[in-house]
Amino acid sequence: MTDQLSMKMNDNFQIPVVGLGTWKSEPGETTYQAVIDSIEAGYRHIDTARAYGNEESVGSAVRDSGVNREDVFVTTKLRWEDEGFESAIEACEKSLTRLACDYIDLYLIHWPLKDKRNDSWQALIELQKKGLCRSIGVSNFTIDHLAELEDKFGILPAVNQVEFHPYHYQKELLDYCNSKNIIVEAYSPLVHANRMDEARLVSISEEIGKTPAQVLIRWAVQRGMVVIPKSVNKNRIIENFSVFDFDIPDSVMTKLDELDESLVTCWDPHNPPPYAPV
Image 1 (cartoon, rainbow, N blue to C red):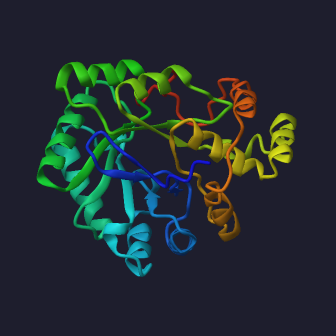
Image 2 (image 1 turned 180 degrees about the vertical axis):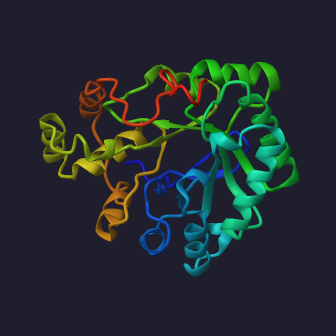
């Protein structure tokens, strides 16, 4: 049984395997309470972003949680509108102000914006050197984007955060990242609840004796990923973290792999919006 609660990144920092996602969590009391509830449940990893508008709420909850700041891993992200070298530096400093933190554990480029992602990556390298970000990474990057960073900078991201679940099983990307010692972090691991009643998933859940959400999260953990399920419901927050007391058998993992239908529920870097080309 796998009970590993954190993984070592390529910069030797540790990242907790299961974190709380906060995309579409309303700023203010909703996000604040979700973070408080998650930390009480045992989470030590909170994921936010400038684009979510809730960095202040996350920072307040982390401060009020009763847990030392250095024991809570905080991720935030550079929104695509702020990409570029100087603007990325400024954006990070503003995120630190909103979070009321001295440093960010993991700072990600949120989107591989054409003509600006390389300048943004150079900025993140500088921010890491200054100690404002302990670890740096990317989100929504394809294999080609990652190869470009390696070619131009020789410094690879610690993390690539992408949409990942059995219904969008990006095995080629996962294999590539594993080969480069880049951790894949799965966002939208619960498919926005769009497949919770799907017959095959329900059958597997009943077979294992766990909820569909726990099965989806555990699948990602056993595939070697960090996973950040989002919820603002205290009971579901607890449920989503209760995935370290069981293993999914290999035969069932294969069944879950076979659920793949290339289902994309968020922005797709292979089919980007015209206003944010990659």
